[in-house]
Length: 120
Image (cartoon, rainbow, N blue to C red; front, side, top):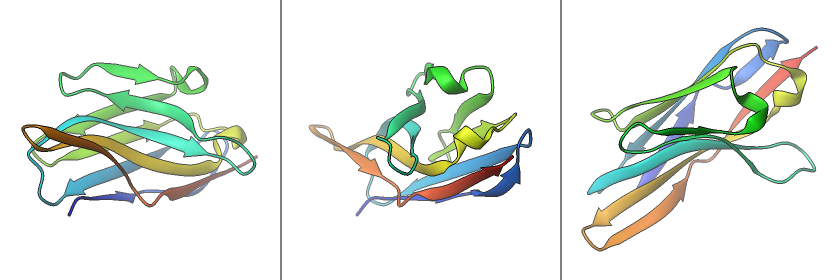
């Protein structure tokens, strides 16, 4: 069984920084892409950032230049460094990963979510 476990959320003031982590565990053949999405109250879930197995990255427009995604392949962990946080970054942040379970089977997985609250 595959699990994604997030950590690092919390309450910060506007302009401060936070670092989120997400570790994958379980019966994994290989990990393809990993990333972060977020959902604010009353809004749809939106892309924050993703990183592919080759290190290629993709960011949502609202976080470009402020957030940085990285991964440690050996630890099966993805990180999100969030700088210059704004109140509009307040949301539940979900870890996501595309995981290969066997050479012919791959599936998307989601973490349980971690709350990030930015006060003004």
